[in-house]
Image 1 (cartoon, rainbow, N blue to C red):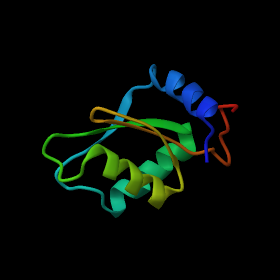
Image 2: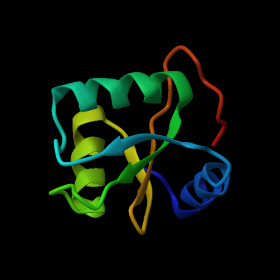
Image 3: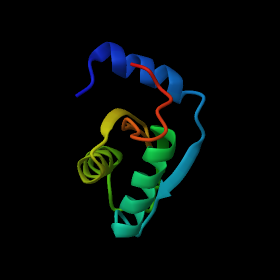
Length: 95
């Protein structure tokens, strides 16, 4: 669980991160969960976008992905989601 200061720090770092994945009408499947988990291991902090044609709301998608990957939801702003999970092998971000 992140503290509010840690969450604020991660939000400030996420501003400069590109959106690396999109959630579309296919929703959240096993392939997306695996890809998100791999990206979290490599980057620790990732930004996703929920497309208009998705059946998922950004908040429900963020909660589902966080639960499935063991990540923390940093922010849900509009249709953007920011997730964080400490990397076991590629630690980059100090909290």
